[in-house]
Image (tube, rainbow, N blue to C red; front, side, top):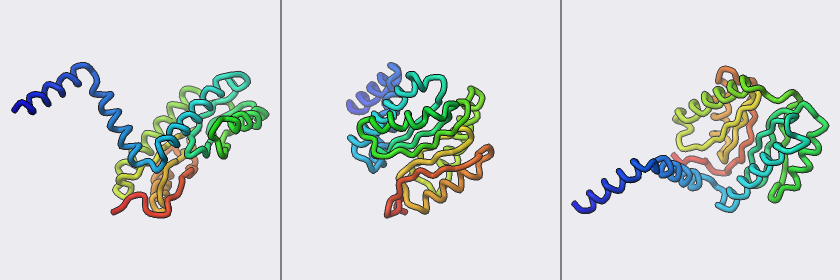
Length: 195
């Protein structure tokens, strides 16, 4: 009985202090780490690379001329976005290459003016629809796919086998508003999900 009282008191304390969100976020992060094939150090390094690229884009000469998001997996970087100054792309690649831990760069930056707020909102909506389709698909149960949409182009990331990658790609292609799907998967030699 004492244990039950203690458990209820602890639960109420956590919820009333607003820490329940942190508790849930911590549990979600733990689940991601458990299903991620990278070591904790590799995850840390990839987050560092992405943060450095974000910082780089916010400084001259890129600020205001380039909108770039990045994704890193074991040092393999995909750059996505837009630049109205194509001459900056070679410089950007060179600068990104100098970031500690970057092994390769896949440049998917399009030459055009950076997206406006309305276009970014449309991309967010597409990302939401794609994620919903992936999460509710029984064949992809337990499979983690990262989705980034830029100018109606959907980029899919994850560590999967070819069957699951093809299924995720097919689902994304059939979402309204999607212009193109780009697979950026790391392929596992064995199924990512055991059935």
